[in-house]
Image 1 (cartoon, rainbow, N blue to C red):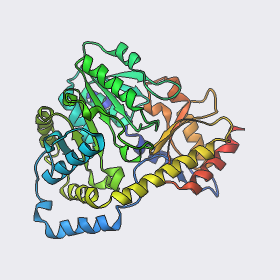
Image 2: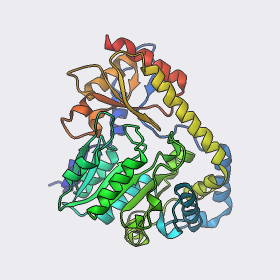
Image 3: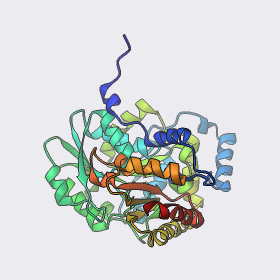
Image 4: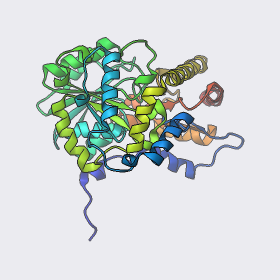
Length: 393
């Protein structure tokens, strides 16, 4: 008899990025068309050289960088985040509001562990970030899908209709993964007030905040004196400083919440990677201008996507921003996985099916693809459009 498998784990979808890597292994590319990979948003380049030098210095000369550290993170990094967030958002945060995690995915699972038990329910905006849905399924927490409108924005009134006795939280991602759209401050505030009125948590994932197209704070929630009773904010250093392999994220919440978060982190990780934490701190202290340049480049690529798709008959960008475009395809009757596989086989283009971000049978998921454009310059984006154009004929 085989050893048992947790049924919650068995019901959880396989990792999408690993799945399309399997497609690559089994699908010959069309002759003369090298792969255009629009499947993953992670930076493809290493951290800038000065940051790598600082990391090497820490590895060579800081013995503490190789030891366990405080479970909630490097004190200097927590203090720096609190000060930076206070300035950026106009609120008042302290180091006791900040926990450092091994990436933003762990920040989400830590928040979820403190909020919901098996059988509870969390509202996810659909299309959702697939790892959020996977985390809920693994934990035995039910997902209440909140569909978006034609503008890819969620409706607070529709969310209110989903709230029941088992609801524990509402999750927003802005700028959004997978749809790219940036939620207006008033919309984020409306969800905050909805969550507060019902005694729920608002989990706000701002992984892509550094690439927001607007100027100023993306919301005013930290100016609310009682924000900690409702808001849990998540952040990632992976995109800002190209630290994907070093796993550094942050969870910002009330100190009382962090008491519970600490239990989770100590059990699964003990502490976030020490050199990665030092790299994040060094980046915050020295790379402001460099990060501004990275943001400008991402915004330029967004503009290139919009320009390239504007003349394409049948292809529609329904949402775009930060690293992603949510693109509706012209093949009526074909599901998005079929379309994605066809693009790989016939055009050498790798993108993720929209169906992997939505409930089974969802019409929006069937007619869309997630195109992660952040790692491709204007030339590659133009080549993408040239390869897609003849397929719709």
